[in-house]
Length: 134
Image (cartoon, rainbow, N blue to C red; front, side, top):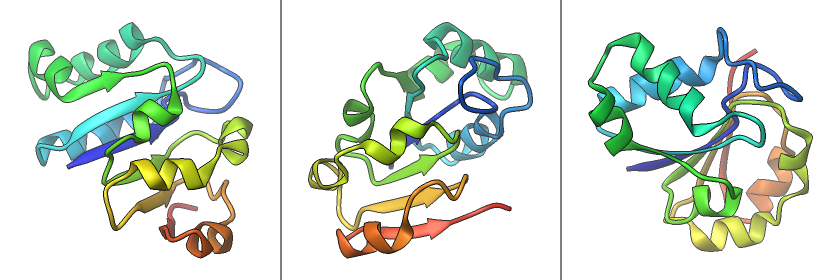
């Protein structure tokens, strides 16, 4: 399965990934053979791979085979089975969610780990929406 990560940074408006939940969520999903596409407006691909490599769970080559870092959120969501919102970037609320859903595999799941999005609205658009976390 392909999972699109919206956000990698620990919190919005920063490129700081220390203690980011995204690292550990990715590690767990990768252990289940998921493929992950990451979009974060400030975190570089080098940082994403460094964070995963530091864990030592799998080889750097395996991390690069299973994780793609993209510069466009619509590319991340394309053909994804699910989206995981892991940083509360304001821009995520402004996306064309109809376009995102149209490009995803169905059923289209959104797991909102920051409770950033409007779940009722996404459900009306046809997403299966879950708000997770505290």
